[in-house]
Image (cartoon, rainbow over all chains, first blue to last red):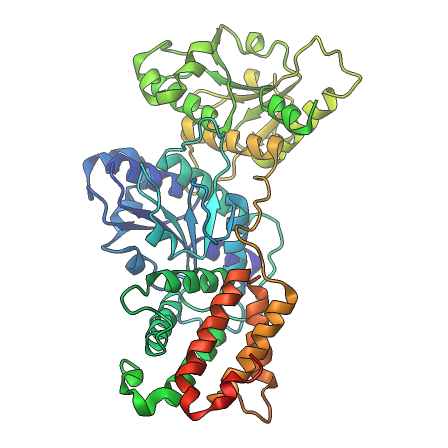
Length: 267
Length: 267
């Protein structure tokens, strides 16, 4: 495969995800912004109005992107099959999420996709990186942020600061085009990274195992699971690491098993 | 003058010039785009409608930029006092102009302004760099291009390619902010990171716990421990995360403890 065609393919790996968009015009503006930069995969999570005439009007000649847009009822569904998930946020947070500039996040995405494209990867699984935008007024919720591997901030004037959704998607897709088609060399990751759903299955397994030992308070398992989740999503786990961690959990469950058959449920 | 205040000053040296804008809504969108990035000097050359209610509506809270915008009857007038002039164009030209990417043009502008700010410069003349946008349908005319020192192109998908005026100004002001103010300041890690010795103690604890479950082959525990170590050192664990993981291991050991007192050794 030539350098150029693999580069062009790589922008096809980008999914733009808009969560709970209130104004259909913004969906159209986002579609147009995507199309100018050669990004075409649009996912909508519970849009308030869609399809909608105003969206079509604002999209102008990018209506084909709206026609091919997929609508999902949860963000988790929209992220199935995504290897790398970036959440755009303007809020400062005291969470332990990594927060980087938009530019850095797009370079990281290019690196992820390039790594996955290496010979190690099973080519039957299409590669995908998602950039997730929250609802217009309040951005991404905490539970939406928890599904992201990385948070990114578009630098703006702190005295004004609010990019509208169409502008945020425009600047993001511009940077993605620069990162994927620009001339900064991309250093691949050494091993294939885990898929979103495999990491989610690991969290489910972890929660079950920790309930057995009563490390998690079964009435309020949430806080500790959130901290474990942040720690492990930050890491960008490899496929083999997820397998290893699940093997590790199974070994605990097996050792505990004689007194607790629960451990084998759902496996 | 501190580094920071001189940086903030430098975005004030940018003038955005819109030539013969047909749709007043685009002027409002441009003003809003400027304001999000901290650029405030707007010059309008023979706008078809201005002032205009639609411009105000699209500007939302950037109406102050419209109120302070200057209107000129020629581009030459609008450029008076400008030291460096960049013309934005999507057309390929066989003119003898330099044509560079938007990013390079904003870096060049930052360099020009910084150079002019040096001690050689007469400080009574305010420094200024102009970024000039043509009319919506046909862009800058040849005579307008002739007034520019440099032509810049915003990279877009060649199969689509037309950024609307508001989007072009948005992306340009975003790049100007990057070029003049650099990336967002480095954000410290939100939580204290673990000390080396605490992470090492975690690995010792992990190895002991995993020997009990026979997940590690006690005769050759090394390979799996190396992989776990690689995964966890990559993460940059926080102090509290190390405590949490040790608590988690203890909970497994406690659950296994009745049959194995080894678990409490060395604690």
